[in-house]
Length: 414
Image (tube, rainbow, N blue to C red; front, side, top):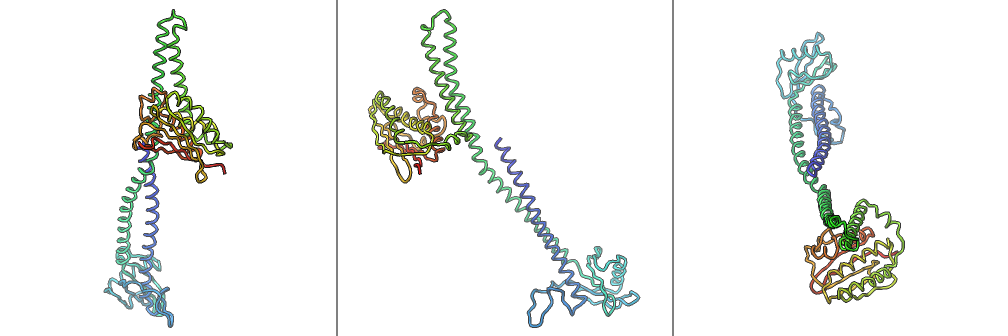
C-alpha cells in the first residue's frame, strides 16, 4: 500500500512538473522564435531602405545607438520596371542571377501578398512601393531556421534533464513525505498485533475456566469459586485493556482535546500529595521507602482526572520497579513558568535503547514481570498522550547513581 501511495505521489507530482515545464519552455520557444523572425524582418527593412533603420535601431543626433543592429543575414532587393520586369538586383552577402530573381518575382506575384515566406527557397520577402518603383526584398531564412532549430533542441534537452532531476527529486520527496505515513502504518499494524495478542491471553484463560466449569455441572458455585474468580480477574484485566485502547484511539482521533480545552483550574500540589498518600501503603507492602517534597499552591489548567491518571501511572511504575528496601522520591516544584514533577525510584537501570522506546504502546522492559504485575505496556504511552495534550513534556533518565527519574513539565496557570 505504501509503495502504491508513493508512486501515486510521484506520478501526480510529475504530471504537474511536466505541465509547468512544457508551459514555460513553450513560452520561451515562442518568444525566441518570434525574435528570430523579427531579426530577419529588420534585415529586410534595412536592405530595402538603407537610409532608415527601423526602431529601435534609429539613430538620434548626439545619442549613441541604443542597440546593436541585426546580425548579417544574406539579403537581396529586386527593383521592378513598370512592366513588372527586373530592373536591378541589389545583393548583400549573397549572389543571385537574373533568371532566379525573375522566378522569385513571379512566385511573389502569384501569392498576391505583400509579405510572406517562399518555403521552397527558404526565403522571407517583403514587397513595397518606392519612388524608384516596386521593390521586393528577400532574406535568407538560414539564420532564422538554424537558430530556431538549435533553440528547440536546447529546450528539448533542457526538458529531458529537468524531467530526470525532478523525477529524482520527486522520488526523494515521496520517501520523505510518506515517511511519517509509513511509520504510522507500521505502528498501527504493530498496535493491532499487540492488542490482539494481549486480548488473546485473558480470553484463553476465560474460555479454559468456562470449560472447567461446564465439565463439573453438579458442583456448587462455592466449589467452583476458584475458576469464577480467575474468570472475573481476567475479565477485569480485559476491560482495563479495552478502556486503555479506547482512550488511545480517541486521543489519535483528537476527541480528548475537547475535554482538555474545556479545562478548569487544578490544584496540582494537592493532587500529587493525595496520590502519594494513596501509594504509600503499596510502597510499604513492597518494602520500599517513599518520600516527597511538594511545593504548595501549584495551579494548572487541565483535566483533573487525566492529570491524576498520569501521577498514578508514574507512582505505580515506581512501586513496581523499585528494588526491595529501595526508595521512591516524589518532587514537585515551579521552574520558569512550569510545574515540574519528578518521580525517582531506585532499582534496575533502564538502558539507553529502552529509554527511546519506553513511551511506545505495548513496550515493556521486562515482559514477564509486567505481565505478573498486571500491566500491558500502555501506561506510559497514555501518560505521554495526556501530557502532550496538556502542552507539556515527559522524559526519562536512568543511571546507576540516581536510579530512574521520570520528569513531567506542565505550563502553570497564567
